[in-house]
Length: 415
Image 1: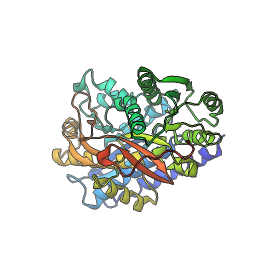
Image 2: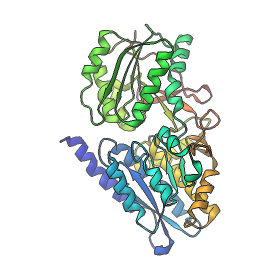
Image 3: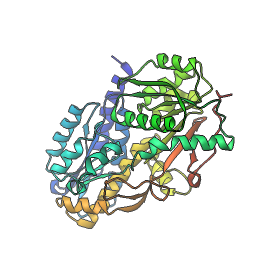
Image 4: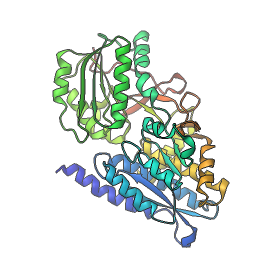
């Protein structure tokens, strides 16, 4: 048994219970209370994300209730633990959807395949999600009209598959990154999110003529030892090492073990370094690592909304927010805006239509939904793909140029 995970699970149960009790609805009549369901991994290896989801939604709900609610309703957050399995996600959905007072659900991610989207559509449940957009698009795009209440705050993940290589090449052309060769090593854990991005990156680098020196898929779950993969990397050191496993504990172990004998390689890790837990676990060993985000917090002077929301989150909870705390905060407000326009939470189809008409500046960028896919639109004028480098405990946004907060530096282990 992993004592660290057991302790985290207990803490998450307490956090969720405390958050649900603190939404400022004392004195409201039962018929005035509208429940907001949060599907989140409150236990297991992704519990840090689940904690953020509950806290972000709770923060927004507290503010909304303090302001008097919306359309005569006060909000209450209720959470369902999706863990890391489809069965847990189904059970959480069934429990929450069985409550007549619950009129909306939200999630950072609830399952690896997003199958719950179909369940939401069957009962016309307004559902805002920020999960793997490739799966969301594959489910919705064939018949968007069949999913009138389901909308994704995350844009198309296509840029995850294609944009790393141009950024690496641009850094090399500018002299900021010295590439010793055109070789790349890739590893992924076997889950839909990581595998899709892994396949896309492998194709992008391969099509551009890069030699793939190591190409490995490992089982999904807690990974305590990456040394077999890293040993093969060191036999023929590549210019770029890529790991698309998204769990922060796994990524922290990977980075720590890479630094035992680092190669002359840029290290790119998908998503996980954006979670505060990653830097807590790696400390100084995270300096130099690169990651990117679609739908991440766009914390730059060009988007003051992000600094505002992050400051509120830290003041309320005493910790920094990663991607999902802010995302769930924004989702709650998007739903509140839609309810304000429609006036009746029971009119779920009208609520879904109002959500789909959103055009709003958020902490992630400007949210406008694509009616063909129900994904938020991607691009520098909407939600951009952001490239970050961690340096001395700070996250430096170095691309795109219009939003950057600093410049990329050669990682300290590279020659």
